[in-house]
Amino acid sequence: MQAGQLISLAINDQVKEAYVRNSDTLLYTLREQFGLVGAKPGCNNGDCGSCTVLVDGIPINSCHILSVEAVGHKITTIEGLTDSTIQQAFIGNWAIQCGYCTPGYILNIYALIQTYPDADDAMINEWLESNICRCTGYQEIKEAVKNTLIARKINE
Image (cartoon, rainbow, N blue to C red; front, top):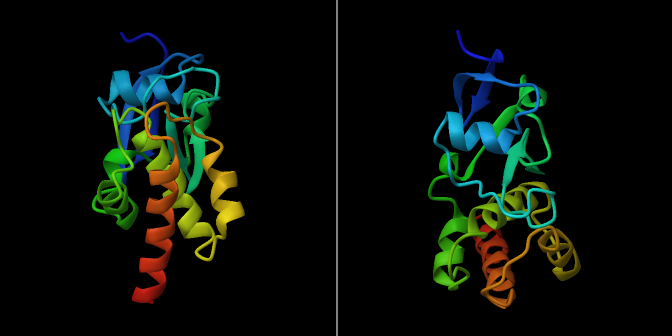
């Protein structure tokens, strides 16, 4: 018999089941139970944003939510976000270096664009504050966001 309780999670449009302890974070469950390693352990206290996932479309640090709290919610990881415009913009603007923070940034900015398609520079900067990158200097990331917003407006 497995330790913990059996839960079902809606992850990337699939229902997945796992035995979890009440203390297991969503980050731990995603990585260790389901092999979804796009969300990265960084600070494990909610400061760096490397573990960002979307819960019902809202960016959440998965190190700060327990797996049992995620039951009944729609979870999107970087593995479930394929070929999005923001991913292509990150590549096109060289907004990646080592790539460790990239999944968290992409999910955060994806949510920004879905929520505020007319985001201005101040709003972009505010949303980017929730993630830390030690490699790029942020300018390339800001350009990727701006180019995505411009491309979206052109395609509307």
